[in-house]
Image 1 (cartoon, one colour):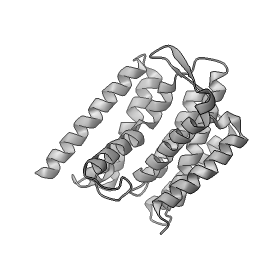
Image 2: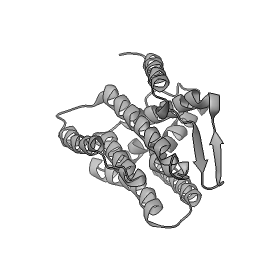
Image 3: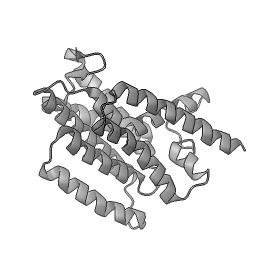
Length: 240
């Protein structure tokens, strides 16, 4: 029953203290391979990092609308961290194993992660990505586009939902059924088919980026186009 503004404020304050205590959790510079250019954030690093973290945390929280989805997405994110950053360490592996067990219980409706679970998992994922990204930049020009490709689905869906709610003059944090997972369920698809479609939308661009030489900006632009066409198609079905 805690208002969403309180949750945002508490998350912001806790993350701010975490970032001030550990500089390697701050995004100090980013490298765009598409532009072949570094951007140094300087004095704005903490606030830019907080902005990025809050976007990720809330996108994960908002996508937690059906059983299994949030946990499956976080599992993919952790595996992507291991593959993209080539960083296989014990706590990454243990988190993946633990999340698979939680996923099993969640799909059986024996456990419910709720806001506390999704906010925690979003925070942990964001901080781990930043830490690994900063470590990678010490040795090579690691493109930030790789990170964007991993996080595209929840981020783009949140952006679209917020715009639609704003156009309707609604609070962006109000609940409704315009998220992609609800549109798929209303098509109607079964829960398993909906999860399959959503996981495909996450895994395909990650796989293309990992195993092909297609430019990252082409993957991102193509993905956005596919996402828009899918949304338009689902809304057309809904009208019928």
